[in-house]
Image (cartoon, rainbow, N blue to C red):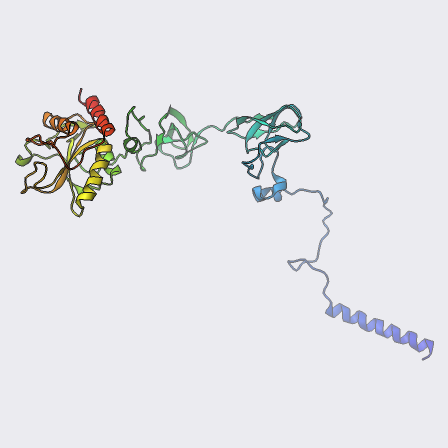
Length: 365
């Protein structure tokens, strides 16, 4: 083919492909279908987006706020660049605990914990010692109403063993520190400090919490708590205060707490329980401060014609003389009835009887 013809053919092909490309090949676009725009931004520009992603981005964790929990098998260590002084975990401190300030005597030595910083640990920008930030002020949250709250119950930045007062949302005022712990009460009731267990308290009694709601009318508040801890429900309580002739005044009121009368004596139904299960219940009640007797028809002086039940006298309450006599019988291993014979069904251990005597003497001087 002549050269001129070849040049003409190449030109035609070029024109054809140029025309096709304008109709079949799309211009580059981004994921939204828009052409890319060069905004001229500095590649090192930080728009703050990464910081909003939180602690999942390790590179964003500031010194003094390590994201990896320390290895409990290793000691905190001052790194190769550490100088003598105080450093926050993550700032020249390897394997340090979050929000903890450490002391170093130089590089490559074990670090000594100086303090756990409630408000966080602050790294000095000038290379001076790190320091604990001031702890946030205890604050009543947006749902707090006027009343008393344990730290952590509608009170932020607060000790769980301290009782605070709120007058609605805002600053919390310390009422008192609770050495035995602070008890969170049901909604609508003030929280309160747990009473310290007196010396000699049985483990079962010491661990039994106070609940404001009484299981059944006529119970002493502490007796109500202890019955609940023994697994007793209101349905199983057959008598508290009562004036039946057959009871001969045993269940008459003994006093009042907070304006509500109580009897220290309580009768419990044992319907559905075997004698072995009753024995387990009696042992629980004794350990919780009751002088408990199983009234089993035809046994231990209880008439065959009378009902099968448990009679329990709470030793930690002021009581009438007839109940004091029953406590004396319990301590002596007797049945708590007019016959005062030996009680054979169950005898409480010596330490439990000593506990019963202790709380009885305190309540009935």
